[in-house]
Amino acid sequence: MSDNLPEMPGSETSSASNAYEFTVSELSGALKRSVEDRFGHVRVRAELSGVKRAASGHVYFSLKDDSAVLDGVCWRGSAQRLAFVPEDGLEVICTGKLTTYPARSKYQMVVENMEPAGAGALMALLEERKKKLAAEGLFDPARKRPIPFLPKVIGVVTSPTGAVIRDILHRLNDRFPRHVLVWPVLVQGEGAAAQVAAAIKGFNTMDGGGAMPRPDVLIVARGGGSIEDLWAFNEEIVVRAAAESDIPLISAVGHETDTTLIDYASDLRAPTPTGAAEKAVPVREDLRVYIADLGRRLSGLKGAMIRDREERLRGLARGLPSPKDILGLAQQRWDDLSERLPRGLMAVAQIKSAQLNRLVGGLSLGRLRQLASYRGEQLNASVRRLEPAYARRLEDLGRRLEASGRMLDSLSYERVLDRGYALVEDAGGTPVTKAGSLNAGDQVKVRFSDGVSDMQVTGADAAPPVPPMAKTKAKAKLSTKPKTSPKDDGRQGSLL
Image (cartoon, rainbow, N blue to C red; front, top):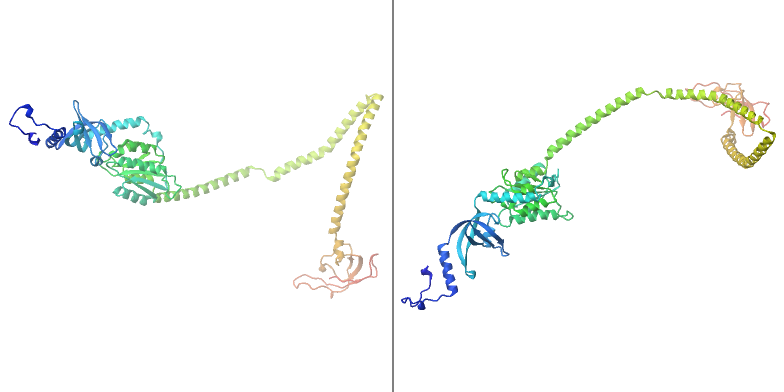
């Protein structure tokens, strides 16, 4: 230590008055050099206490054991390389050097590397944190939501350069290609936990209304590694972000044997990133086969159902009576009632007449006059109401009769005769509709619009031409006879 001190003048005297006078800075600098030379590289096993991170990125803390405390500092560059986030109560092994802090006359350790004091220490911290978060209900199975059967958009939170994203995309393309959005993050080291939590929250804040669609499911993935490598996914900020995600989340961190706290908070845990892709989408070819099988089964069941309904309908039809039987019974009852009704009416009339006679016979003359007067008044009132109603009824019936007459007159054959047609009748007055029904010498009547003329079929040369295949009889000319009807004007005609 004396080698580092400045030479003191007058050293040959031992008088205290002649001792060298140090400045505080000189003495602090000498102590600093002595400590750093003597303890330039040390490893310290201790428990962290009072851990705090400054805005500059430096981490300050204390290293303690049962009987002593040593201040420590980890500069920003070294802190960013740590595999885990230092926390109070964690037992660690720190590597660095001792130095002094002259401004406070303190010595401290500058930590260049820090690691948990064995896996047991990290596991103890992990178990303690797990109990704390579980007590808050973050791992409650009732909070977990089902993963969509066939999501349209899948969001992936992982490193953009590792093999993990390539494995996920390859497996999705093999099974059922989907639209994939990748949010690139660090998955290890300083800042990894904050980036993963920010990515989960960022996907949840997307509304899907813009050019970027909102994912239907999230996959948080990382490859395998040690517990220190995976420690970012045990951080409380990541676990809370996964538990608060509105989008269903699949965790796929490490290998199948690795378990992190995000696995408990996620809606579904996959053993590997490739397994997460398999759980996110079904196999498209399997769906095609399944749908085709359902179609065949549906067709078969539909045919069987139709045949069953048809057979049941036939059975029901055999059990129903025929319409003729149903109507026949009703018709029989109608006939029976029709026959009984007149007799019943006559019997009721006779009974009422007898009752009326007995009633009249028991009334006094005055009472009869009173009733007759009362009935007379009622009858007069009824007559007064009946007369206009009767007149209206007769007028209405007259109009209907007149309209029917006009309709009948318009449909009468006489209107056809008015248009130049004639009606031929045989001797019995039956209309002749075919020329083949007349023979030579037959007497006929030809009715015109202004009268009737008697005529006789006189020859076949006047007959109209007929088809060669038709059965014909001799056709004759029609000539008038001297005898005519009163309206006959004596004209001759021929049957056309």
